[in-house]
Length: 498
Ligand code: UN1
Image (cartoon, rainbow, N blue to C red; front, top):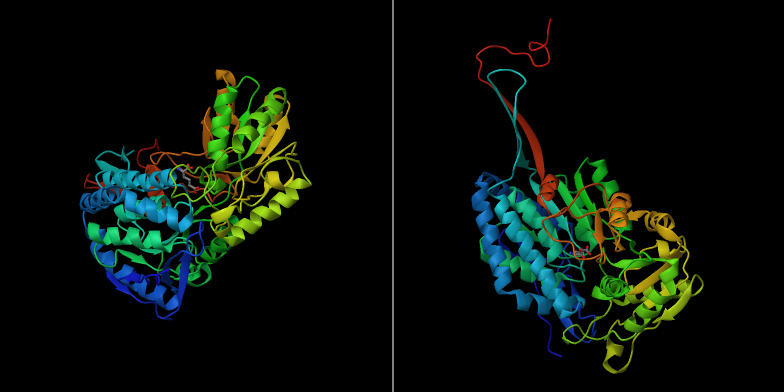
C-alpha cells in the first residue's frame, strides 16, 4: 500500500499543519488495510487561530450584500455538482455507505446550497402595520457572528452543508470540525468552498477529536452559535458547556424511529419501505427505522416477508454497485451492534442475521448482517436504545391506539411512518405521531432539504435544520420601528381611549 497523503487544516484562507504536529488516520471501513489519509489532530491552539480568522473575516462578510454572498453559494453548489462522482466515491471509501447513497448525500448538499443561495435574495422578515399612525414597523435578520459547526460522519457532505449554507448566507463565518471518521470528505468539501470564492477566513476547517477540537470550539467565548449533530450523550455535554455561556445551540441527536404497519396496509410496499429505511446506510442514519410496530393480524406475514428479503440483501464494499448494505463505520460500531444483538436474543426471537459477515475479503471490514428480531416488547432495550446499525425490532400491537402508543413510547422523536390505505387512519397518525418528520406510506428516511428537519423530545433542543427555518439558528431578529410623524407617539397609550 502506498504511504497515505497527509492533509492540513484550513485557517485564514491557508492550508496549514496543526500546532501539535500530531496526526490521525482515516481508514476505509470496508477494508481497514486501506488508509484513506492522514489528518491533523487539531486542538485548542488551532481552534483559537481559526476563531480569530473567522472573527477577522466576519467584518467584510457581514457587510457583503446577502445576494452577493448567495452568488458564492451558487458557485459552490455548481462545483459540488461538477465533482459529484468524485465526492461520492471518496465518501464511500471513507465511511462506507454504498455509492448510490453517497451520490444522494452529495445531492442533498447541492440541494441545500442552491436553496440557501436563493435565501441571499430573501432572508425574509416581517413588515407589519404599526398600531400608531405615521410609523413603520418591521423585523430584519442579522448574523450572529462566528458559527461552530460540529458534524457526524454518516452524512459527511449533506449535514455540513445543512449547517454551513444557512450560516454563511446569513452573514456568519464558520469554524468547521468534521467527525474523525470522515475528515477526508470534509477536506474535499472545503477545497471546493475555497475554489467557489468564499473569502479567506470565512470558512475554517479544524480536523481533530471532539474532546480536543470540538470542546475548544464550544468553549470559545467568541463563537456565538454551535450547531451539532451526533449522539444524545455528546449533545447533552455540549448543551451543558454552551449553557454556561448562554450560547445559541442547535442539536440534532438520536432517534428510535418507528414504522407502523396497519392491517389494511399494502404489505409489499411496507416491506420495501421498511427494508430501505432499516438497512439502507447499514442502519446508520438518525432517521433509520429501528422499530416496526405491526398490527397483529398481519404481523407474522410481515415478518416472514421482511426476513426473506433481508436475507437476500447483498453485503459488501459500497464501491461495488451491486452491493446494498455496506460496512459499519468502525470497530466500536460493530462491537456495539454485537452487544445489542446479544441483548436482543434475550428480549425477542431472532428471525434473520445476528452475525458479523466475514467471508473472504469481508473479513477486512466491519460488516454485519441485516438482523431482525420479532416478538419484541415496546419497552425492551433493543426497542428503546439507539443501536445505529442494521438491527430491526418488530413489536406486535393490537390496533391503532396500541400501535400509536408503542410508536410514541420512546424518549426520541425524529421520524415516524405509517402504512395504511385508510385516509382516516393516515390523518389520525399525522396528528398523533410525536415526531418532527412524519411519512405516510413511505419509510422513515428521505427528508428533503426545503422543509424543516429535526426531532421532538430528546432528539434535539427545539431547533430545526434545512428549510427556511434553518436561518433561525444562525440569525438574531431585530425589530425596527421608524416614527415619521414628527411627534412623540406612545405605543399602548396614545392610541387607547383615555
Ligand atoms: C441523518 O441521518 O442525520 O432523511 C440525516 C434522511 C436524510 C438525512 C438523514 N435526508 O434520511
